Length: 263
Image 1 (cartoon, rainbow, N blue to C red):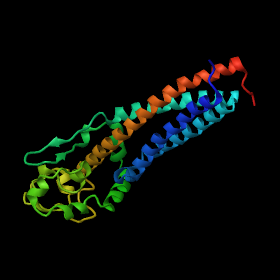
Image 2 (image 1 turned 135 degrees about the horizontal axis):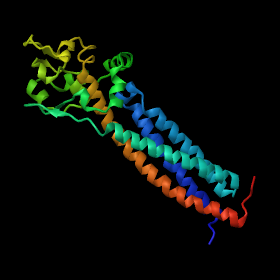
Image 3 (image 1 turned 60 degrees about the horizontal axis):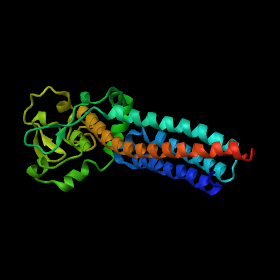
Image 4 (image 1 turned 90 degrees about the vertical axis):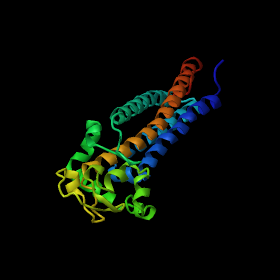
């Protein structure tokens, strides 16, 4: 039994609704403190979501008013967008599959190493011109200053579950052996460490460890967490769009038997 115009239109309108999680994931990334400084993934996701929205509207109009050529455009364009969304989801997963924190004795927080992450992510922070812009952006945020408001005692700080970027950027690496004064002020009582991150550390509040590899690693660990969360929403949207697309092929077959308006 052929589907009515209203049913066809409603089915295709679901594609419009499924664009919202995609757009929302991009906006959520853009609003995040860390991602707003890096600016890699959010705009491609937002643009892809807007394209899905527009193509979904074309399918809705074509199905509701039985416009054959518009349904053809919808089916071709949506197939391309579904493939692009699938590629994007796979790309995010592949570049974030590597990289995790390492526990340290008597510490609740983890330490991060730049070499643990994928080559693509490392490239985003290893070029000095890119990192200068990112680190300047990070230094203007409240990521590190808020630690001074939360912790005044060393034991409380050492038992705190810091975010990766706080662990990497706001304090010297544990291996440096510095003495705690407050979360962003440490005294070097060793004076023998040749590790570059230990030498890069500064108690100047807009410098801290923003030039350290540990900070770059912490930022990548934060990106990994956020990107994987966004990837889940994109995957759900992909599954929904695929189902809607397959169902949407039915009204196009109906157009061949019932004679849709070719305008």
